[in-house]
Amino acid sequence: MNSEYPRCTSKLRNDIRDLHTVRSRRETQTFLVEGPHACEELAQSHAIVQCVVLRDDADPRSRACAEVFEHRGTPVYAVGGRDMERMSDTTSPRDILAVVVIPESAPLGNRIVVLDGVADPGNVGTIIRTAAWFGFTDVVLLAGCADPYAPKVVRSSVGSLMHVNILRDIETDALRAMLGSVPMVAAVTRDGEHPRVLRSLPACAVVVGSEAHGVRPELLSMCAHTVTIPGSGSVESLNASIACAVLMYEAQ
Image (tube, rainbow, N blue to C red; front, side):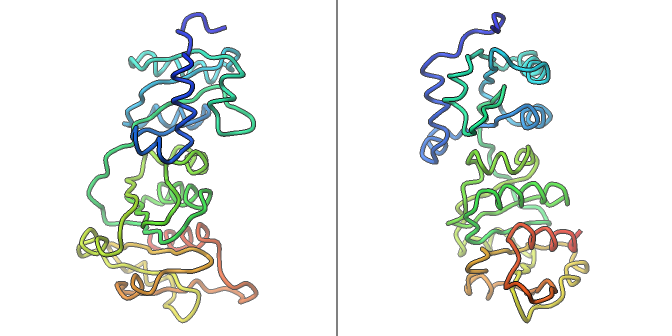
């Protein structure tokens, strides 16, 4: 038992459990981060952490991570295995979790990803992670995309969520003004330019739609370029996160 930490109350347990819902995340402007790796990434970021919960039988890595937060003045609470299961979104609960304040969005940079109708949380999380890898500054999610702070997205992003500026629920009409002079480049399944065109652009906003529907027509009309990733033609389209990774690589 973690006698050095106060016990997690039933109210805190229930409040954390509620963060699995979009409504609670929006009302509290907080989200959940689970697992030692993600929490270690969190500790290296400028994120505001409300509290950390550590399981009684946590492994040394998770205990060490909790100590980092404790030394910073973040409240750390201890909890039994059953209560951790109630708070966790996974079938195999982790040893540590954190409640994090959703950061304020910042002005857009010059390397941007725009997602249109990408509703799969795994795809959104992977795209955020890949954006961080390739040095993209921002990920803009238009209305209808998966919530970037949903537990499955957070897990898929593997800690990268804290290193990329996220804007969500953006309407198409507002997007152009937000981008300013940054040209938009949309991924299309056929008849677009070769993705190498991205190499010549000092700034760009890569626009990727869902695998089922692609980029909506009104958004395509706003784009300076459309690009098509060459392939064998044996499949109709690429997964959204794979297509996005290819284009970000070209832009880099």
